[in-house]
Image 1 (spheres, rainbow, N blue to C red):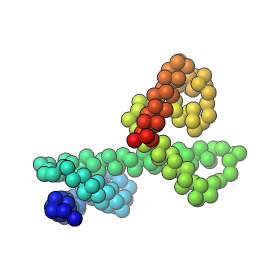
Image 2: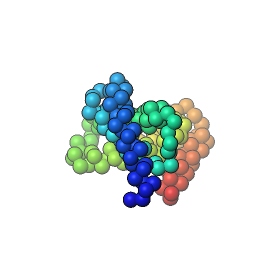
Image 3: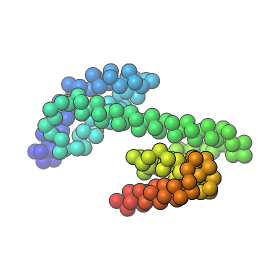
Image 4: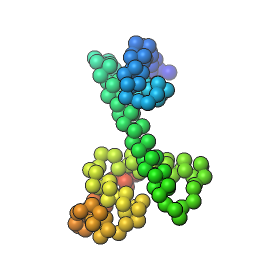
Length: 169
């Protein structure tokens, strides 16, 4: 470990000792359990530790809050995806319940898709998901979203281009 790596980890360690309890308390106000707050707080410091170019930090609490909020939003998005998937399974009488392994694999795939589409406008995401997950045709998607078939085609091209670009990186 180089001297720069040691000083960075020492600096982040000092931030951890100074701000971990504060960050946990702040997160606990927004989350359903102290354990989730502690997990996100720990992940916040792990992200900070893996970003050596951020030293020195003038306002550590502001940076920690920003990182933690992003992680909290990811947690909420993951939960929403899981809930939506489980609701869809409950409403589909023809579907047999998947094994726990299959369920975990499907949820992981949904999270990966969500990350690929992150940052795209809502209609672009919806178009992609209706096509790829629900199997709707372009005319059906256009009717569902109240947009033209041309827009559906443009949105699909945009989403697929994004997925391809991110997968090639």
